Image 1 (cartoon, rainbow, N blue to C red):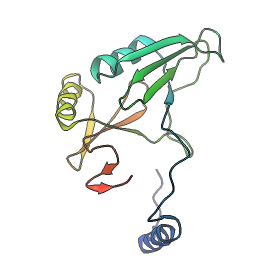
Image 2 (image 1 turned 90 degrees about the horizontal axis):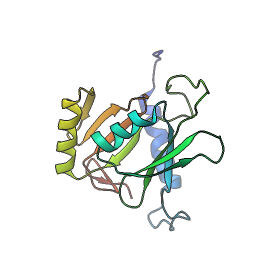
Image 3 (image 1 turned 120 degrees about the vertical axis):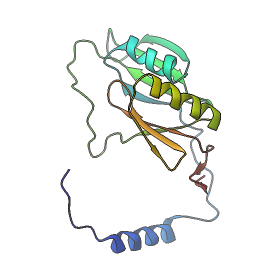
Image 4 (image 1 turned 180 degrees about the horizontal axis):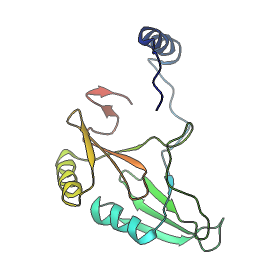
Length: 165
């Protein structure tokens, strides 16, 4: 990553201006009902299931052929609150490894109860999955294909003690 001189005061001023212009105290309801599923790519279906269901305890809910690519699997994990994490595999396509690019995925943050957070942190450690702990409430790590995940001990709608919803 290339380092540059960064004008942090200008960034803060821009953030304050955006907040002033766009953050409404009485915001209207969203047009969306919720996140149906977030789709990622899997290079190995069995390994992905072992990681998400076996290690992270997100139950596999369904697997069927992807309607858009014959031979491809589309499979889903329950991540709570009526939300799903989905995966595709694309046999025969050389998609290459995960890369963080502008417009791409940075990470997926999933809220878990603090007791579950501790248990899953122990399971990650026992499995030798490297992670970074931040602010005592977040664990950042990568799945077997390199997608970055965050397990957050804060309740849905909160982040580090601030209400975000």
